[in-house]
Image (cartoon, rainbow, N blue to C red; front, side):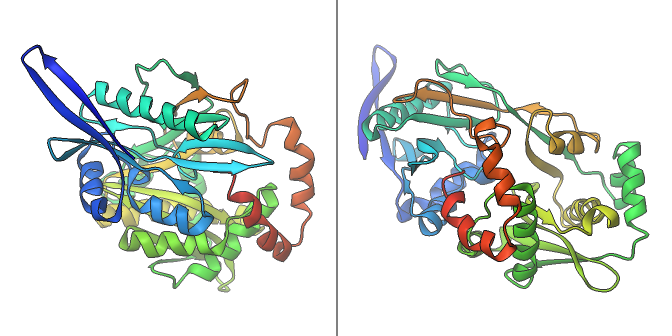
Length: 360
């Protein structure tokens, strides 16, 4: 894909602008652009093209605008096609953020226009663009999720003091439970993490991703990913989380635990330790991720004292007649969720990846 068009700022000057598709030769400059853009996120990085292609075999269309030889905007897009869950073009599946970022709002709109044209060409049900900020866009808007985040204080005690009183008491309780915290880059904690995450997913009635997906995240993003594992005083597993790091942010992204987690408060302990560890390494911002509005996770994160910030998801309907609803709260999935919760863990680990690849 290589679309050329002209943009004029006055009657005397015209500039050639090209919209191109990302190749490996452009990875470094794409990521440099993302890291330097105020709206750039971990989920805009070029590595997602490799991770998603290798893990799920989805077709990726990572578009960028080139202006006078320099990147002036990017838009990662992935085609997700399923007979059960529909056919979509998304920026970006398996990620909470996405959408176009560019030097100007006009260039953002041009990337959106290109995405709409691609969606029409691919004959998808819909195009979905996941923005952190409200856009001046003619696309359909849906606001069903919010994110939670906070600035990290200078030291561990101040981080704890900044947490809401009730949640702070829970964390203090967890600190007395003789829990151990292991944080490792690479795959040292991988097996324990996958066992705990897949247990949590099964208990929630959600299909787990393949091991390959998490392996690819570690391989592609390297030192920007680590895994924390919490064990009790008898060295038995309780909770785990995979963390992403981007600029000054830490993002605890894939987390779960077993039946012991609630009593031990191991998840509360874990997230607090992730905060403290990240601040000690120079990270200043804690991104607690996305939750569906008024859900259990939404209320849990709000208890930490973080205020919800609405996400803006924009849609262009192609073959669909209405906005998609893949939420677990959708009544059509209720029976499936209840059935999944009864599966043996091993069965859920085998079957889950065949479904989760379409639930981005």
